[in-house]
Image (cartoon, rainbow, N blue to C red; front, top):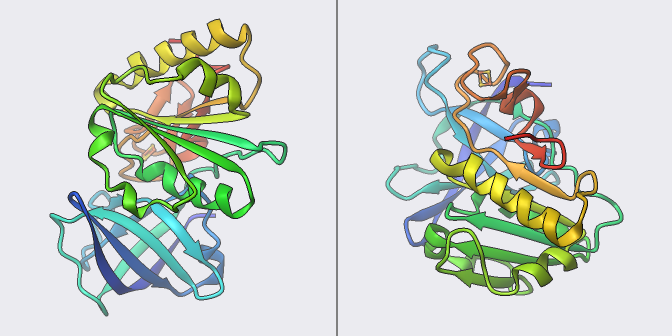
Length: 245
Ligand code: FES
């Protein structure tokens, strides 16, 4: 359930290549139980204007300490001990299947921030994780990833070395792509996976939409994926076995 609350910035740490990690202490343990896929809508000032919130994507959480780790561009300035106003959690947790042993995360020409929490959770539960970084995603500071992560780089934005093998190896795939091209990238990957596997099992290939979410409640329609689906209510991940482009 989405709730308003206040958190305090505990720590700010630069991780390189234009990114910083912000640790926030939240009031409620329920919020610190935020799951991969869910976001927070944040105001860092005291205005009551509901549409001036930015989307903060957790990359990890520690419910024992009531801490959530966020990744933000380092062009923004955050200081320890400052209050921030939260609305969340927004969205549905990623559906990581119990049976999944091999997880493929693809940052297609787009930073992998939205996949990092899932990466951490999967590794902590003894899954094997491969991350594919193509195009712009190659600029991401991968030193921030856990060392057991396997990373594949590609200059080509839509394909990568061992594409067929990795898609066959994976029990589940989650892919992010930039807004202007996401339909193109998602539909092409859907096609490639279909050719390789002949059928797309449910929950196998998941497109993660990174759309603006001004309200987080289904009211503004800014995050509409299809006529009846909203990123804030039904996403951010959508099963590509069910998507038509
Ligand atoms: S953020 Fe307003 S409808 Fe989803």
